[in-house]
Image (cartoon, rainbow, N blue to C red):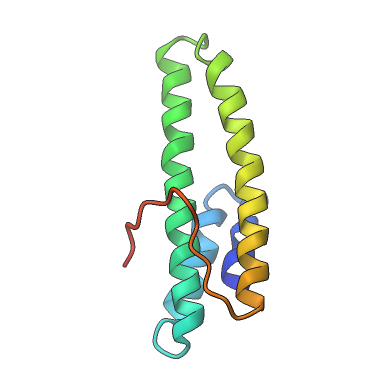
Length: 109
């Protein structure tokens, strides 16, 4: 559960959404397989969202700000999805059920 909720450290520092799950994964990967699996899942999800948000920023810059008409609503929708899916994943992990985030690149294995 802490692996998923640690992503909310992004409210403190921008890289917190990746750093929190990464630390949990590195610390627990050898001792707690379920926690390590869920931390890796949270890490992959947050890396995927970071890539998408970076793409939205680049699109806005390339279009000299005109792209914000598209990128702001998409970014807002992704932000809400990030919060909701992270909470759902934390609840599932607390119940002992493995959770797989939808539309996630599996970069860390």
